[in-house]
Length: 424
Image (cartoon, rainbow, N blue to C red; front, side, top):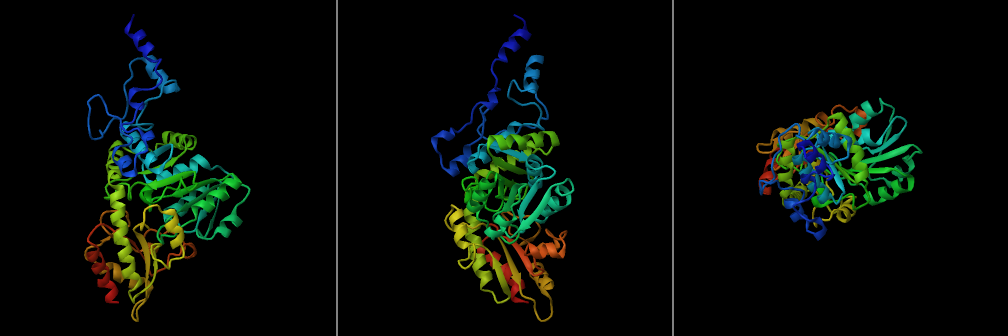
């Protein structure tokens, strides 16, 4: 028997060995922290304990027939790292398990994940219905590019269930929301939106970036697709860019096709960083939330703060809903917006800038979900490309500050914010 014939015989097995098994049998009903530490990994013949980084662009086949089987779909395995990579697949498997989804698809960034969603599930003539309260770049993508290619886009208040129902059109194909939202940390009723979508044959897509699966699993609440900017809490230390979608095998295959064809793929190194980040996600989110709850109480009681947008406060209009949707007790996330009162000598924007510029420890940056507390002025950073009307509809006022509460000693975070607030 020739070597070529021997290779051909091996093609009877339709699955490459490293696609067969997971180091953790998810059928055994493990807890979230166990899944975060162990799920998704396939150990190689080297027997490595920690997950390996596969920094390779391509893969070697045992024969021409083996290569052909991979390319034509007769055999499942790696073809090219724009399509699949073992390090990326480990991250995808682990995130899918944490979100209780069948499959995840990783992308180069959070915005790459949102673009993938649009390209996978929308076409010219379709209607995208979204919440007013979104990250500015998401609104820019929808208004400037999806509309350019014939997708109709409209927006409603995320907390107004009647507005959602009244805005549904015969051509509505996707309802999209962030919960909690950026930058006001507003909450959508995911269960209600799920019922609305199912009654009208619409996909419900929920950005779970701020809550993460440590606090909330939108798929369990009826969503069809979950979106992540992995850059934020999934990494947790502000190191690398990445995004992901999670959902059913069928929906994720459509997303995967977009990523494969469009090159919106995640790098192996970034995937490895995210995989390691997931190991401490639940523990970090517990600490983030504990700090955030105390910071919110400080802010709401400060005389120079006119409003605090944080569902962890008992008088917040979405407090009961957030308590019901977030499965971690006392966990409301660590992102909040707060509005600074203008002083006798300064307007709202100047007052907000004064508070930001007075910090000595907190980082002035547009990133969030970091171990380090970060602060920014949304009207002139994350949402500056929006028109004044669009900012008003999103609730982004000139006096609004977005705070991402980190893992420093909470007393130090509060003292740093007090420097500017006390001196207004």
